[in-house]
Image (cartoon, rainbow, N blue to C red; front, side, top):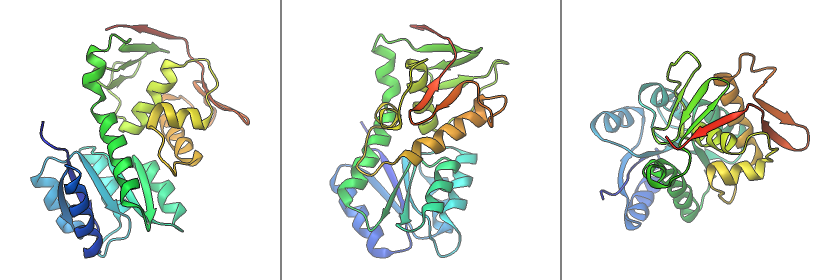
Length: 240
């Protein structure tokens, strides 16, 4: 199999070269970019499996590049952020980033997070032969695990980031059961050393915007005070 292709976008040449060398030693193919212009060139000319993207770039914000990437052709993104920039981390998750790593960071931690995201992306093939239920229907919505698609009651395809998809899968596989944030992190994302509650809260907010008639008063994904969340619809499933 061809090694996953990672794009590292950072204006610091030491970080770019260091990550390229380290990730290459771990069996990954790595391209680099130093600014928004090079980022777009790499995006247009290469088939990428994941992007490691610095929020602070010299010519434009990494968050702006993230927004464009998710709108054009969604590719998993892990953000690199400064420790103090909580607002940027939250906005990044809201825009569709899969995860974030705070600078200064451990190379091993970043590698672990990259592998978690890549494993989620490769789960489709495993689901095809696992014998598990692959089609879930709830409130006239249809989630197809094999195809990784979500259809609305009208039959329209609804775009989900892989993080949103994995969280929704966790909910439909455990309906009418209170799941705390730790359980959701384990079920949906694969735990990494510094994942936090806020990550799940942001993903839930994004799912509500796509599923709920009134996201401010959700009927499907309800908050349980001091408990977590509960997915309330009746879920029917089929092996597909």
